[in-house]
Amino acid sequence: MIPGVVSYVAAMLLMGQVTTRPEPITVSAAVSLTDALEEIGRAYESAGGGAVRLNFAGSNVLARQIANGAPVDLFISADEAQMDLADQAGAILAGTRIDLLGNQLAVVVSRGATSRDLDRTFPGRLLLETFVSLPLVMPPVATGLILLMLFAPRGPIGRLLAPAGIEVIFTWKAVVLAMTVMGLPLFIRTVRGGFEQVDRRYESVAATLGASPFRVFLTITMPLARPAILAGSVLGFARALGEFGATIMIAGSIPGVTRTLSVAIYSFAETGRDVDAAKLVGVSATIAFAALWLANWISTRAGVRS
Amino acid sequence: MIALDFTLRQGSFDLQIHERLDARITALTGPSGAGKTTVLDAIAGLRTPQEGSITVGSRVLFSADSGLNLPPHLRHIGYVTQDVALFPHMNARRNVVYGRRRGQKLSLDVVVEMLEIQGLLDRGAGQLSGGERQRVALARALMSAPALLLLDEPLAAVDVELRRRILPYLERVRDVLGVPILYVTHDTGLRFLPRSGAPDNSDRARSTIASAPAASRWPESRGDRP
Image (cartoon, rainbow over all chains, first blue to last red; front, side):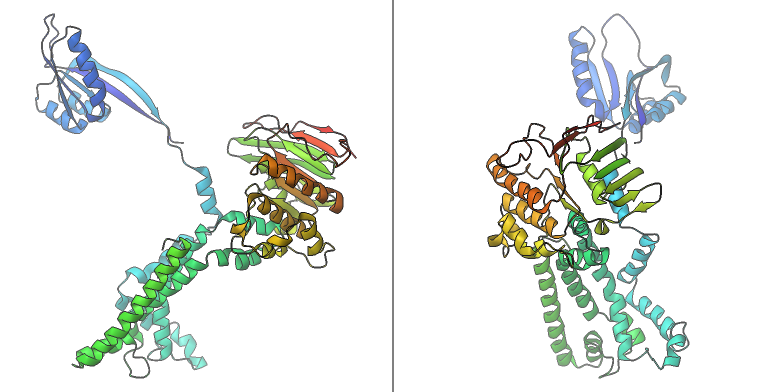
């Protein structure tokens, strides 16, 4: 709970003159007071007071007008800082500034929501999620360059793999690596949403029936999140299919070895083989359309938002 | 014998229970918000008290002093929650056998026959009526051979006619299987499970949670002990 106090402050201004004869008065007030002041103004007029001219705007605007000499008789604002500003400008008649109203602001935060979220968290979860999602936002070529530096024979990971005879760069393994790294963020984000939607009651009941946490995950959580897992797989696959930048950095474009669909289209277009390129564009468009259609179909059927 | 002796705090809510239940069936009553479901959750291991202990039969399930807190899947507590929560991706049969333990004496046939759910087993969880879901959930809980059966408002969601039909099944669970039952209801006027044919109250006990938030207590347990 965050308690706060907002007070309404009213002040008679220098321009106002208290006389017995009804005179028109000008009132500047915050917009939020429109309804109340219109009613008060009517009451004032019908009680024999002078005509009331109401000027509604934001308190900061009104205070600036007043500080600059606007002819205002009464300034009503919930913003003490703006009232101070008018005060400091010498625009308020001494002794006429009064606190009119006060109220308390209570902000209620759902305790259940936060504790439930915390149930499934672990230290560094946010860091890990951000890290895994990086390839989604970073330029693929940059991701590819990082992978190249890591997996090159003299890179920190490549050096460990080399003694075991595992070469990554410019082999099919590089293609798999690039596609995995680029497709994983979409997969994980979709699947995570699916897991979060699984009703925890089912997991609780399964536990009381003697199922270990691992069995609960396999038999309850996973099957109930299945639509999201399928949709995530399709989206990850589609992303991998279109992968170009990272692939060309670490796998190159070796025909029959590492030349993927996307890379092949680029190569054909570059060498003027437009017909071949167009054919492959047709193939990739068909696959992409089918994959997205499948993902959407799975999502809508299960009522899962992806 | 079930011994509940614990304090569970949730925000400003302070639930205290000091109770020994020796009856075969105990009804836990009290107004909404008194923490009846919280008591069941604590016994099942879904919520953890801050202090005290929970003992069912000879097994200590929870003891704050010795740092013991058995996870729900090792407690052997059958729990039919208020919303029943049949697994939606399984048919009734797979729901019922989900918690079957190896080497238990209770056979599927006995439970199916007792609760008369033969015709329901091949239906999906979504294709069952309210009363049918109750019986399937009851069968599912029984098949895990629980040392104690917790029922949270099992009759709240069904109409009077269905109540009349479900009550006999609960009586059979009590009489045939001898599983102790702890039963939550807000309906203090409910005539609770009289023995069929002989309306005595020999195995009836009733406990009440007195007041709601701030300091909820469970002050007394009335009724005859068997």
